[in-house]
Length: 631
Image 1 (cartoon, one colour):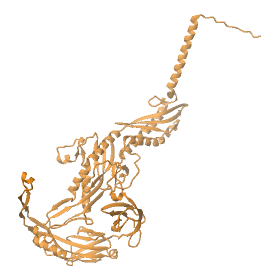
Image 2 (image 1 turned 180 degrees about the vertical axis):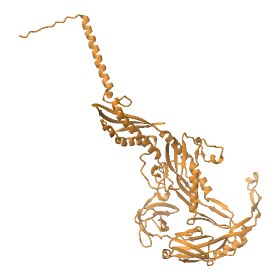
Image 3 (image 1 turned 60 degrees about the horizontal axis):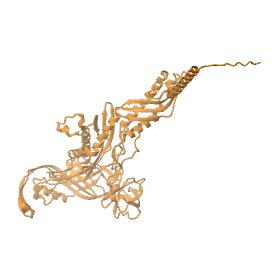
Image 4 (image 1 turned 90 degrees about the vertical axis):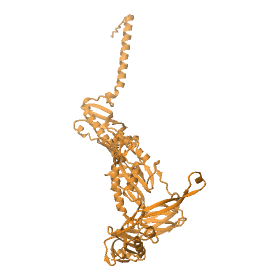
């Protein structure tokens, strides 16, 4: 039999109120506990950045942080070395006219040009933004952090795995901040933790270096200071324009001129400094190279002869620049003196590397320096802007086929252009001797082809209708020139020229003896020069001309005569024409192929003792022949 026991509790009001108080306190504690759980949930399962992690997990986590820091440092180094790029823009090759590709090979590192001329003659710039640098650095870290070598900790009993990283980068001064969001699950001695965020700060002047580099670049784009230095260098180290008092031609070897010019460019570029680098501005020579620009870091400008560059000069005779005297021609003896005027037009293109330095860090970027017609390029918006292409070239709609062969019908690859109405369009490179493309419409234009080892070809072709043309190139052969005068060997000074419509070339004998020739009709000319020993007396003449009257009368067209004294000083002739001759000669390819030497015999002329004798020699030279043989 089951007994039922009833417990009866009798309480007064105070006891009830105490129980309610206890329930309230317990509820508050439960709510507080739940709140603390959610607040410190991440700490229980693993800390986020900046929070304390259990001591036993610190060695492994610190190793990961060290790896992130080293990866960041490596990425910063690449950014600084490659002009703000870890992943350079798509490579664009240069051409024979524009030697710059979109990147400069700087000791094996591809450094994108911040400004350059493309192969299609477009002005382009590739200046990275700071946001783009941050994005590329984040990508670099995301790609490399999963490969961090932490295997030594597995041997110590750690079991861990890494999730996919997501990186945020902040470039500031003087540090770069990195936040890597990447779950790191760790188990060690039966304890587990999940670390989701990893922060590092790498000391670096990247931000400040970039800001200064951009400041230098903007200053160049606005002021063209490198181009202005280039113009001064050109006029100091190369013949540009002038007049010399002389009765003999002035001759320059173009290759030697370019070599001296490159040496000067290399030295003068390295001498450029910034005002902020505390240089003595009282020294005139040093002041010339100091830019009115201030940045907080040291800045250097570099150029090297070994870097891609382009030097062109017109007019030229092959590899020579020849300025001929005036005053020696028939009827000009009355001048009583000789002079040599010259004017040469240069197109110059070369790279400059800018390096901005702070401590051991160097941020560098290159850009192209461009002179056209002896003048600096014009400063303009260069974001892919065209450099005034000829209007003719904008309308290419006639299908043409160009086939290029040598004299034995072998295909030859070369560069094709089309010239018409004073404008020239680049059409491209042949492949296996053929080019199929669209040409601008024009009547009686010329297809021009040039190829290394062959003389240039010029073929008249109308491109109003579609068609096909075959162009033959003459091969160039190296020949050694030897001169005899009146049958005797000659080793003095001479100017030797082979002039033709297809291939003209000149050499300054005897320093130059090699010449490249192809089959064709040539005007062969040899001028022999010797030391002179006479003086042309100075003259003083009076020349009068009408000039406007001063005051009111001049306004009504009244003039008065004004006379000037023109004085020409004594002129000592140091080099005179003493022999030579000319001959029209058709050179066969078989002669060039089967011989290595061209022998030219010319006749001597009487030694001149006066300006009249010198004029006589030039008249005799015009009628004097030359004997040419191959051996």
